[in-house]
Image 1 (cartoon, rainbow, N blue to C red):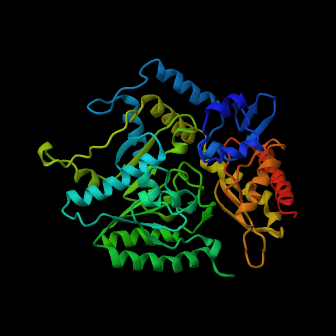
Image 2: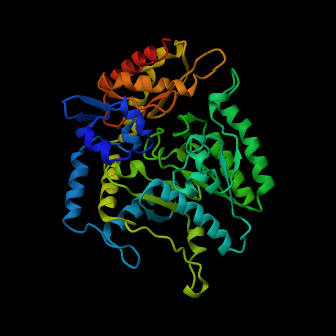
Image 3: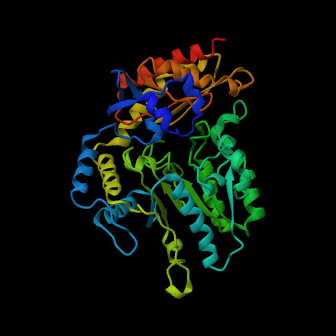
Length: 444
């Protein structure tokens, strides 16, 4: 299988030459937190297969939802037609998301949801007589996807720099992530200090900016950097003051990852756009949604001849099977007290790695809910990083796959973002494996 793969498949986010020395692992099946290869080895999926899996592999309830839906309707175009799964899912999401997000526009992946939001925001102001409002503000170290619009909104050089000539220019405010706070400074105080830069940027550019985009609380692809909810609260207030939309990219952090169903809840705010994907379908099928307000919707609602309609579509928009899976996801949240259960699991995760705070090469341990990250540094006193070329995080990964765990790193950051069905023994095993791997990776 490996030989066949390497002759035919080009893998994502991968230097394929690595596989001359780093063997691929073909998976045969999954069950709960475990992935199994063809040799009988098993691995805890500690990163939820790129943050999508919420309730374990081969979940019986989700499997049944798919089986039932495929017996009724597998797909139908959503332009001019509708079906019960998309209606019911939309109504249920409106009920559980922050107040005011009353309209659901469907696409099929996270990047596409971001594209929808940026186009809608610009188009809203065009339709309401403010065509000069066409620019966007992001924050440093942000990541919003790989399509050109979403990539333009991102600020992680690893993904962006090659394609810079193809991208829109952004206005960028410095991130509020607490990693760079002064000694003794709280997460909240640092976020407030960093917000001053955002406020200035918004004030100076209010006439030509249509939206600010942020990943609430955690910059996942940006090495799991985290910040205090006060930043979101201040940002919402400023967006109202300057008539600028707020886009909340909850693609990775939504559906319970940060300790609440949606990260925006921790700041008590409602964005103008909320982008959802990943956990929406619990790791089963591609589906994404851009939720927005009645105010935005009404700016497009007019006679056909005005040409104000939002002419954007995807072939699999609102796919019924994907919607059925998303409904099953919401059922599990409703029936199994998931958020409350996760609080105890998050506590165990934090406690299980607390000893690593004293490790000479662990510069930071940070956590929001069911996301926990450990950042390796060369010099703890100065927080000097290891050179990225040394790939220290990869050494942790190579150790982990020999210890029944899958700890795929983000540079020099090892992190846990597991399915919610993980138990205490499995969490503590991950902590043991991470400790062993970090010791080995930083020994020389």
